Length: 590
Image (cartoon, rainbow, N blue to C red; front, side, top):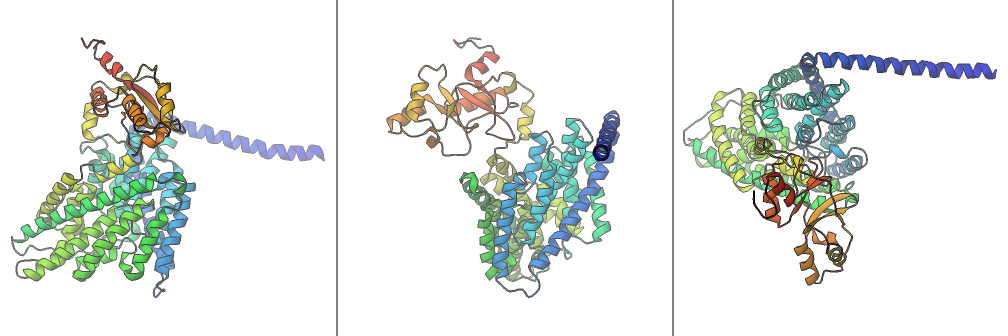
């Protein structure tokens, strides 16, 4: 009997082992074929990514609507509008903190970070977490959008497939904009605008070599959406008409006002988000409740604040909303969206920017039509142009904005007013808010994405060539007096400070001595820092940038940090290293 039991135990284990062995052999053969025909596989994969992205967005829409109907049934009492956003934000905050830390926020900065700082890597856990948490967020009534998350989820699908098939690192990175375009094409039902957005915003190069694959994935995703949900545009827009040339001036005014609203939105969101990030990390799980509570209180009095509000955008486009309600929604939605996003809820800012633009444009159009009824079109036309103006001012993708509105209306005559408003909005927003919102959000997370100017400068001498292993790092809990004594015999005049293995700043001898003089000798080094950022460089930065940053900060050493995590040290670079690379000796002679 014992022998029979032993044989019965061995047999299943043997079958399991053989099954695993055959799967390993099969996958190795697939990878071998893929590597031999990588270009052809890349095109086929673009079609597959487009189809999967389309299915994902359809599931997004269906799941969100069904959950929303269950949570907010017709005729439900007002207390639901308060309780559900709070409970939803609390549950989502815990999931994001405990299981899906990379699923917070919009999704566009994270997709760009995967492309430029993470070797094209977006994990399957992040894909699943982003989908689930964003769906729950939107169904709970939190006023964020699904378009940004669709970008990250679709780019994540592309990344997972590319890595599983054993594509080269460069090909996996190239799949990120392919997935991003497919996600936007389905989420907005605008395939051409999706292509332009992927190249203009995600890649930052309209002449990127992945153009063909981006177009293929975008078209495939759009076809899947049409097959499953029908030929239904995101918004039903009335026929646009220009009544009088005087309206061009009103559209310019709308663009200027939209630019200032874009600046207010961006600064408010970034400022509040910085405050939340400075709170202890252990509070991250309940921070989203701040957004849920604010939305719930607002929703008790003004139900239109709940959710992204595309149905109300449709009412504004049809001229069916009152001036008072539109102005009220501009103010309430501005704070509801910025607090919800800043506190850490999962969701994007695409939809909210369109909502704010529609309400602002509708309000401006209503006033203009009241004062000049003979010379102006219906308020809905201004709501349409306002959507584009806010999108251009907040997202900083003016060409995508024009093409998106054109695809929505299929009316060429709307382009000129839209371009006027976009240009005015873009000028104001770039004038008063230098850093684009996605780049600023990434920097707050310690992810420094290269700009077009930076990529052009990479061809010269770079930090990677002269960086060295770090040395003489001071712990953040050391007292200022002890640090002064410890560094007396150092060959440097500046030192890195770390906190639990993470770099938090750089201190110079002058700063330390000044702190002792001011009676701060017993304080910790950590108390001398009051900002999230600190002087640093990345390995791919040009050397002249390192010199400029040393000069500006009055230090002779800079930490070389990771683009995906500003607190992760990769080495150091000193003033002597830079001068030596240019052949300059200690006396300053070449």
